[in-house]
Image (tube, rainbow, N blue to C red):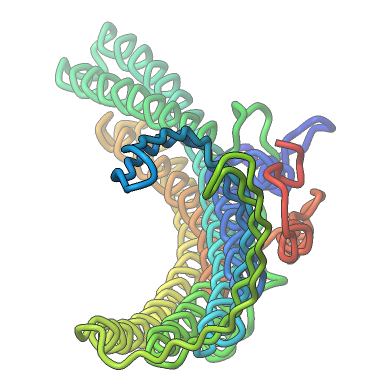
Length: 453
């Protein structure tokens, strides 16, 4: 019965394939889109860091009112005199600050920001892998649960017919009331299993909708990723340790932490900058006066002791760098374990498929034999019901094993770090984070994002 199997069956023209479902998830899944936005936000840290190379320009303006009253003492030639003067001092100016040397802090900040961008891209790749694996799992779960529900409903029909035949035989005295009760009990259990299978399918459909973004309609058979799986686990491990985006993301995090140490140490270095200013003043000393002033000043600041803050920050950054290295080692171990675990599940699923197929063949032969023997009175109704249950269990085991094989192959490719839209050949507009990065990395001004927001 080919309709029983997850990996077999007719494919309609309008059927959703596993690849097309994953393409929907790639374009519409909110987790992927949120991580893409996070990468774009991280891109902006590069022009922020580069601002340390650029001049800081500010304009100032002020206006006020002042009153001056002066009294002159009397002399031999003049009496006491009192003068009152009201001024409106005002002015405006422009100040430019340009850093010339800051202990290489700006240089290291730019390098750290660039490493953060690269790390965020690898995190995006990891998110993409997770979503595609979730999509493949959800797709295969719907296929599996649909097939199991069909089996359970068919089992209800078969047992219902068995109960009818048992009652007929009871009416003519061929079987006892016990046989009828056994068939009735098995029918009730079958209906319960069908209800449970229906609830399980509804749950899988809900998860499919969450990951893929649409309700599942007609789903084509799923196929394992044999073309992307290596021949042995050692090859898989080699690929994973060299290519997995989670490992690369941690390596970039180590780079950022090490650069942060240099940034903190830069606070102990001399700082050299130039300050230029131009001011226009009115009514500064007396009513109607005007003065224009300009200056250019080079300023060297040598830190001698700032209370120990810079030293503590440097030590803290070194400890953080050590933490990031340990975290990178931990991720490597996790990736290695994931590859070995996925490989084991894939091998087990392959073996389970062969065993389940053999189990089905044997169970079908046994059921046919038990039915023939029951007709001549050599087997009881319970024997027939048990044989039917054995065949049902074997078919469910095969469906589950076929689903597990497909999911295990996707899990292995995910553990290797190669479960991405390009490797899968998905027909999508592949997202390139470099486009946005190139658009903003050297911007000096502007508050609008490249997409116009």
